[in-house]
Length: 359
Image (tube, rainbow, N blue to C red; front, side):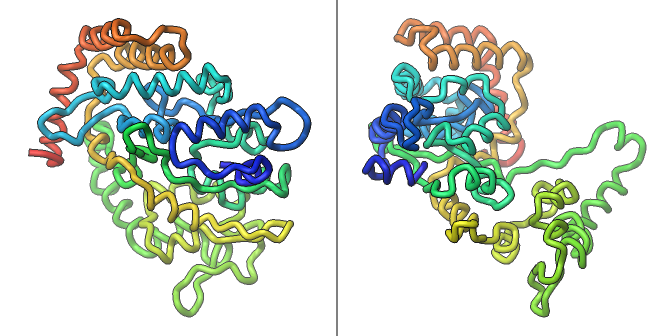
């Protein structure tokens, strides 16, 4: 959330969804950037995933239904839309839409467009990856536009029953696969050797940080440093990012030493220090839904048809294009069942059992 906007309007950070709504309304209507124009919205986001996507989980989470699946009851694996709280969450979201406190382009925005907009000061509340927000190569454009601007990390806002979730966490659940063609060609052992090499110091440092002596150096204690290196070539420079694009998914292990160098603090031209690691630690302290099991659930057998029906209806309910009442919601659930939703839920339970996530 934009702390400078809060300060200008004399507001305190919200702790509940209702308080967040009031602040979003103020950010939209009370010229928080002081430019005399009606050009800001309270909330910004884009669809990334099923339904409203995970960028709005912090809102839907206030009703205890973030994400596609509810896997918390091993005896009843089900889609979250079966929970009576889900339509309540959509009603609240529609309240944001109706009040015009959310950037109206959220259903069609792409990730890059969304990021361009927060850097242009278009909205003051959002869910963003901590590094995409606070790492130097990403924050610079925002600071150039708004030298006095400042983002404040917020706890997940509580819903009407005191529930709150930040998001569904799938960050530690990568699955490596090999194509059948590669396996049939006998390339399995070579691929295994590559993965083993990446787990050893040589592969770890090269894939993760680049060339020693060019992108980084090691001090006497084995810490990564950049002293004496070309600032345009060091590992943290935007120009060097292309050389280590495989780092996050293939080699990084998130040790404290690694995280400190991956997300170093830095000073802005105005003198203020930004610490991405602080944002990371704050995010990690929040309530997240354990999402690793989601990764082993196979797609719906007719995923294109199912996803289209699911996504279109959820968005239409949120926008108010389709009225949301007991009958229309029941019709929506019936439509999902006509597309074999219950069979998919049963198959999901078996997938989880086969993978050892439940008995």
